[in-house]
Length: 148
Image 1 (cartoon, helix red, strand yellow):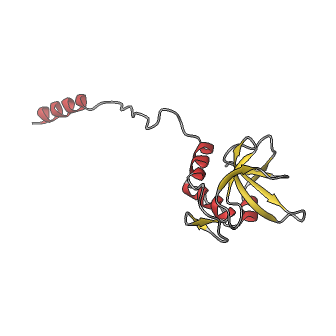
Image 2 (cartoon, rainbow, N blue to C red):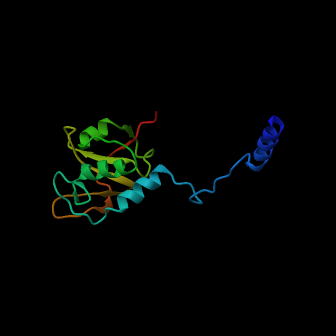
Image 3 (cartoon, helix red, strand yellow):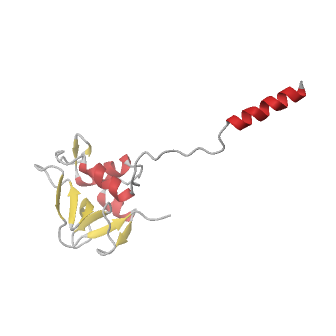
């Protein structure tokens, strides 16, 4: 009986593949920057509303928080808090998918958008307008997620 059981187990082991190669879901790897921009682009045309933080309507920091949350990144709600939670980078270091902030001379953050490259951003501008692509304003502050 022992011999039969050992033979059966040996035969079964031969039938089990030793390695399995999974086919990639996508042919090209998806990077973080690409995912941020694709997700933000989905909301172009959504109307602005003060305090808006869902696809029903967005304010500027509600848009950035919502887009990042959709890809698993937890950002604070307000623009100033978002900037403090990130790492500032120079204009030359800024990458698509980073956030771009705008402040008063006193340092108050009054606006935030998602940098998409080539001096442009996706943002929710102001009452009466909709989420759109626009040129980055003067004197931007760029910030990226801190690396761990």
